[in-house]
Length: 470
Image 1 (cartoon, one colour):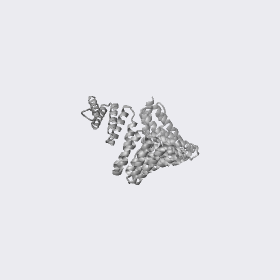
Image 2 (spheres, helix red, strand yellow):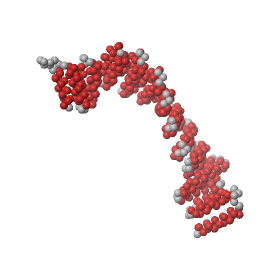
Image 3 (tube, helix red, strand yellow):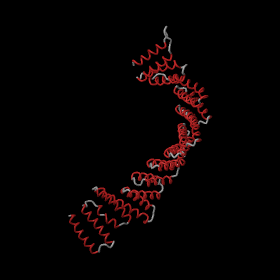
Image 4 (cartoon, helix red, strand yellow):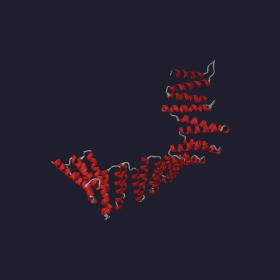
């Protein structure tokens, strides 16, 4: 801080005159700037700002652009200290603007740079109208010189300025100009970015019809630029805005398009979310059958995930309550799918309910008996699984359900195999013997075991069972 104070003393001394010396403004400028930098390094932003401001005032006539830079630094330090900064930003902006016009004649590039600095400082100083005017002048001048990239920068900055001020309608106008310029340069990704900003602004204004159009245009341009995920996101937004307009059929198609894109990226969680939105939109559009087909497709897609598979089947079934034939078919498919992932209890329940529906509709026994048989098999597998984990209560419940389904299917042989296992109090050894007897019966039916030998073995096992029960 002693160094900072020394700079200030030297600056003040340089501005004084005496009999032996004249004021030295340039030395004062050097000292005030040195003091400002010193104070800023020590985070004394208030004093730094004052020193920068004094530097700007001293050098304004000699080097206006240097003065503008000092005003910028003063404004920045005032902001950090909580003081007023707009006045210095505006002074800097005015200097840059005035010099931009003169510089443009001899050096257009430098003139455009100064004009952009002026616009930025006008905006920071709160004069946004003048900032936009600078952006527009810069854009038009660049466009006339066929300097399209600079025109894009100026128009884009104007659009963002209006966007920050929440003047979305004006922002849309400038983003559209930028999009057209990028389109003329055949850069679809950048065209898409500006269409997306337009769509988002229009969406904020609740002008959903127009916002939908530009979400879709953005999606198409992203697709052209091979930015698939961004394209999918834009299509998703279009689907949401179509839903707000109650254009559910169009929304469903757009959601499907988005879903297919994320599926190509192997993002199956997002695919499921979007396809579900598409199915729900079909329901709202009155196309229940289509929604059911889509939920079944989701169930089959996630057939290896019992939770997801069952969830989507349940959703499809809920839309088929008024159509017993369709509901029965869905329940049968659900049961088959759950069997594949070894969710035997739920599989048995679905298959049993499907068979009941077919029987109540008066279908011939050949239609539903096979389904009852499958339900019995599912319950039996569930029960055996419960036996392996020593859950006797659940095992007996499973066998009892299996017996009930086998009876309705007319599967007497299957009933004989498990009927005893459904009874309480059976020991593990008894179960093993009965399973062995069932296997021997199968061998006899295949011609692998003589009848006399089978009879002898049965008699021996029956005698053993009597002793076990005692």
